[in-house]
Amino acid sequence: MRFLDGDYKVAVGCLLAECNPRAPKATKQDFSSNGYFVDEALLSDLQQSHPSSPKELKGFVDRFIELAPNCQLVPLISADGGATGPIEQSLLDEMTAAICNRISDALPLDAVYLALHGSSKGTKDEDPEATLLRQVRRIIGPDVPLVITLDLHANVSEEMVEQVDALISYRTNPHIDMTERGMEAADLVASMLKGMCTKIGFVKLPLIAPSPTQLTDNHPICEVLDYARSLWTPPILNISLTTGYTHGDSPKSGMAVTVTADRDEASAKRVAFAVASKLWAERDEFVMRLTSIADAVSLARKADFDREKPAVVFADTSDNPGGGARGNTVWLLSAFHMEGVKNCALGGLYDPLLAAEAHELGEGATFLARFNRDEEDPLSGIFEAQATVERLHGGRCVGRKGIAAGQSIDLGPTCLLRIDGIQVLVISQRQQCVDPIFFEMVGVDLTQVRSLVVKSRGHFRAGFSEFFGPAQTFDVDAPGLTARRLNAFPFNKIPRPMYPIDAHATWPVPNPP
Image (cartoon, rainbow, N blue to C red; front, side, top):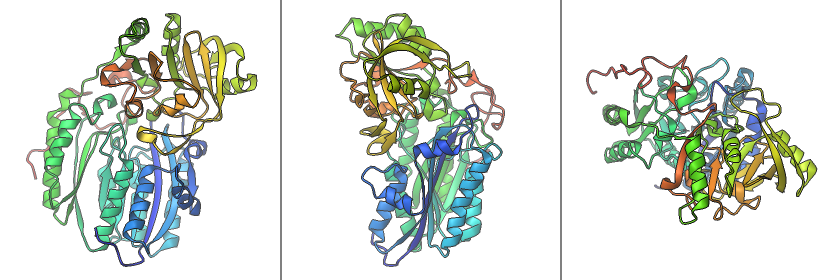
């Protein structure tokens, strides 16, 4: 792509949150712990070797500066709440206003880029992304390009699509392409500034699938993506398949296909319909294969007993902080300990009080470790056992592989406890266990571990792939806020009927466009 000659003025910002309605409400602290940057502090963070801001934001900024060296970037805010409960409405309104006020103050603008998740919700507003985009569009007018990137697990509404000129979602799960998607957004903005006019086709499906079935290297999503790539020819600029956030329980829940084309709305609609049809045809293939706790115990013991067998990793998917869970359930820890599992590591278990106690006692101390001593949710569970403090750490690290590679991370005061044959990583900032550095920074040699339990749903697969292949990986069926069986929780706000919750659900599109 040729350089842009003008001194274009482009606003950039981020508001990311994936909201589980059954998790505790999100507060300002949830956003601050992941990195909350305003104005010039945002640009300063993005200039760091290992920024805390989302990768797609840095990808966009670096690429657009490359394309338009004389550009003026207007920093808005970067607010990343991770996976949380519903956002306190006053906080959500405050962050929305922070973005919109800064856009108003910066007018006139040549373009706006926003990194959003797509599955946020407020305590009152069920579609905050649409609310934000409507307000931004009202401010900048109909002719200024507005481009967004979304998580693959976005629940996309038609109202969101109506406000934007291009919608780009991640194409990998585990998510490892955020930087590239930000760069793609920069390329589209640059093309629009040179006169390209986009048109969008959008199809929403009455289809929800358990998130472990949505891995993009696995059947059936990989075949759908391959089919989409076969249709990705001019005038098609982007095909975004969003698999939805299973636990969002939202009026905009469900899978969707959004296609952006160069001036050709008919082609955009035709391709969106074709990809959605392929996705609907595969609906019965989104089948969960879960391992019981008892079978996980057996597999862990066998791996330790027979060193000729490969080591195994267990995903505690029902307690995935990346889906809004607390990251503190003790069901696997309790079962593994009761059955005498050895050479096992487990983490990162979120328990700030326990981590603080370990830091006060110091390395080498032995004490009665009481997990979840002040937790009221019965899904978390209670566990206590004699433990030795093996290692203490401040919790700051830089991800080295997978979704968090190169990104600054803060786990808060962290400790490694040994409880008989199990090493337990305890953290103070709730984070999905996605990167081997979490264990390595406290001295765990993952090449020697025979079984590993991670508080994660799927992103650990990219981070820990050098230690565990697909055949060594098991999703465990345990209690938690992100239980993978669709009948584990009631769905109160999704459109009905919805397949497979409603077996009779159909896709009411009589004819292709």
